[in-house]
Length: 340
Image (cartoon, rainbow, N blue to C red):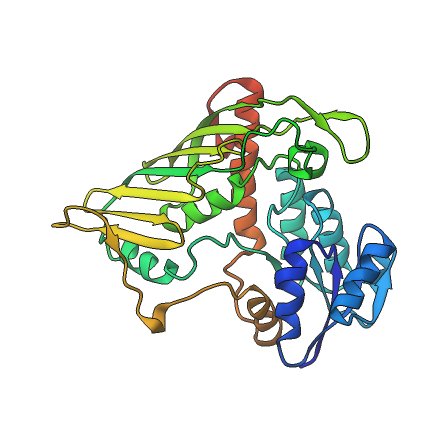
């Protein structure tokens, strides 16, 4: 089965991963691209040998010879393009940070549920190689009941002179704060869903120079702390920062009644009953996994393989977490996720 894909938003991740990933698959052709400007779209087309450049993304979505659309835009367009793609009878793969807010995510979920097309979100990419082995160990009770989960995503650096980034603009990124959603997606794979949470945040540089000229308010926090009570009764603590140059980026540590595991620096570590400290988790070759997003999307279309990383239902769950964080920040209270 041949598959013809259109790209809306050929940004850095799309150019480094998605377009080359699709072009490596037999019978898959990237035939069209649309960027914010025709010039940048033409540049991507020239780089990857893409035949057509569109100035209007809706024209690409509605083109008769486009079977599927890959959305690489900033979050402010994810919902609108996803809905139009599904309503046009096309398959859709959208970049992570599913939507601007929970209401948009639920609209996407409902439209996908009423369609027979594949609807997929680019998954959280953290520690996929060890995931099957660790999930098996969790299911078998190797760590007992999980009690404490700590998530550190400290990175970036202190530079008040740096220009405003789209991730620091709420009108482009919505309720999403740094890597909060995809970290929560990763935690939920092992520990399940959140019941309630309370959050605190701070912005150290309230205004920055805008690439569009002048200055603009920074309305996405640069430091975020969240304490969450999970449905399995565990406690999860998140600390994210974009101003911690020497911080630990993307570290997840989970402690249970029988043992613990840690995801750090691209590797997984375990400490089981009888262990004095963490040791590297050995992954057998047949259980090793990894980034396979483009192939997973194509296989879901061709072979009706279920989408697990990540479907719109799971996307709504991490968008519920992000919504709860924003409600907690704005109202200064603990939020029950079931109330949203």
